[in-house]
Amino acid sequence: MSEAFDAIVLGGGAAGLFCAATAGQRGARVLVIDHAPEVGRKIIISGGGRCNFTNIHTAPDRYISGNRHFAKSALARFSPRDFIDLVDAYGIAWHEKTLGQLFCDGSARQIVALLLEECAKGAVEMACGVPVSGVDHADGRFRVSFGGREASAPALVIATGGPSIPKMGASSFAYDLARQFGLKVVQPRPALVPLTLPGTEALFRELSGVSTEIIARVDGPWGKAAFREAALFTHRGLSGPAILQVSSYWQRGSSVTAQFLPDRAPGWLRAAKRDRPRTSLQRVLAEGLPERLAEALCDRLALAGELGALTDKALDAAEQRLAHWAFVPDGSEGFAKAEVTAGGIAVDGLSSRTMEATKMPGLYAIGEAVDVTGWLGGYNFQWAWASARAAGEALIPRLVDPNS
Image (cartoon, rainbow, N blue to C red; front, side, top):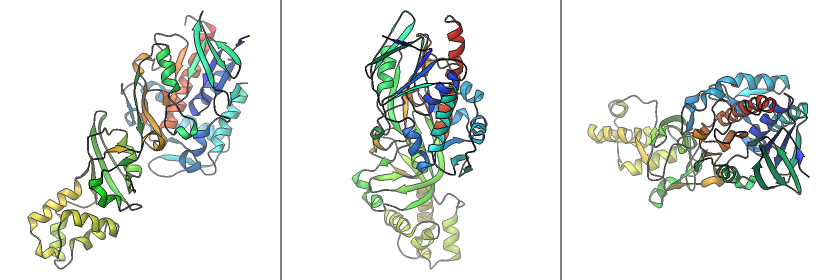
């Protein structure tokens, strides 16, 4: 026999739990179903175990989507300050790390505990460790089969995320379900992910563990992007915050440009030659870069000897290359190492105000499952909170008036 609920939320992550709590505290009878034995597993490992739960610089232009305006409504109605107030209300200590990124002083489990307490306040029912075996829709109700049970509700929320970090149980379930109900899916791809370099760049792969601040640039189908942060050379290619950021905009075959020594003014190598003609280029580079990287760059530039022995033309060319050093990755480390998934359920089939499917009343999609992907640094959590709040609030008038 089917158990009746007002809303069923599929997925016990950040978006799913916050949506369930929002609706539950407004009087809805809500069921959360998650195939994992405990909810919030991705939250627990996020931010090095301290959960980068939002970013104070959140703005719509820091998200990638098939519709760059889609995220505006939800983000405007639930801001970082709103979530910070909730964190403060629970007495969770936090700090700003860099670039507006907020982390718990203690453990990411504090955020999970907050969400579970918010759900408890709304008498939300949890069903964990039970995979969904079937979903259908008839007579204005969604029916979900799971763990030998069946539940039905006039509202169903897809909050199961994307396939990033499959070892945590992530899958493409959200997309399969969306297609079942006629929603389009933008091709999912790994985002905020390390990039790999081909064998021709073996010199740089030998720098594994070396890190330096750069400006990383990319010009891809999702727009131009530039980020000034640290880049890390790995045994497979490139990583670090700057690379993870541009990876969301990168597509196979295009280059990533690194600007080394970004604070140097034009003509700085000529000035170094004038002031210290007997100094080598490698030594000058090593004053602002790790020594191993300075050596590798000099090997590629093929400029040996003292600066005074090098022509101004050669130094100008070296300076230009250091400011526009192009790498052509041959791929990424894939969903296994991607922090999030770009692409997903197409936003042109959803209401930006409520997250409800325009052609399937009662069906909602939120969080990472949707084609909205934020920058590194708490932006994706803020999208989870904002989209979840939008859907959770929208459920209430629907339950009062199914024709609303």
